[in-house]
Image 1: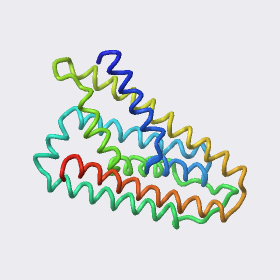
Image 2: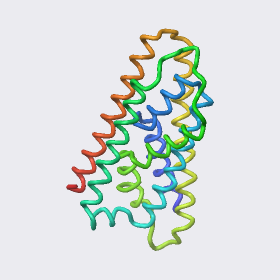
Image 3: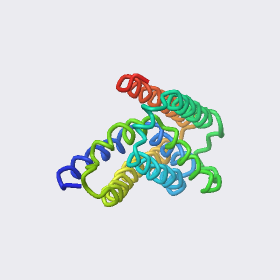
Image 4: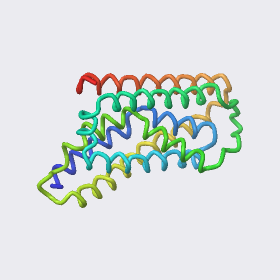
Length: 208
C-alpha cells in the first residue's frame, strides 16, 4: 500500500471512527452507565469485529453480495433487528444509576460490541463498499490487509475512547437521572437511525 493511499485511507477511517453511529452510541452509553474502563470492553469487541470485516473485504465480500442479493438483503434485515434490540436495551433495559452500577461481565460487553459491529450496516458501507478500493490486486494482499487491520483498529479505538472519556466526564458532571435517561433514549434512537441511513446508502449505491 503506497504511502499516499495509506494516508487517504487513514483519514477516511479516522473520520469514520469519530462519526456518531451505533458503535459510538453503544460505547458511550456503557461509559455513562458503568464508567470509562468498562466501556473499553465493547470497544475492543467492535475492533475485533472490524478485523472480520477487513478479512471479508479482502476476500471479495462485495462480489458475493452482488452474486447472492437475497442473502445480502437478509443479512441487512438481521443486522437492523439486532441493532434495534440493542437500542431497546440501551433505552429501557437497565435502571439509571449515576452512582455507577456494577458492570456486567466484561465478556458480555465484549460480545455486544462484536455482535453490533458484525451486524452494523455502517460497517458494510465502509468495509464492503469503500475498503476494497484501497487494495491493489497487483500487489501482495497480506501486507495490505495487515496494514489495514492495524490502521482501522487504531482509528476506531481512538474515536471510541474520545467519546467514552467525554461521556464519563459528562456523567460525573451532570448528576441528573432525567438527563441520563433522556440521553440513553436519544442514543438508542441515534443507533437505529444511523443503521437505517447506512442501509439506505447501500441500497442507493447497489440497488439492493
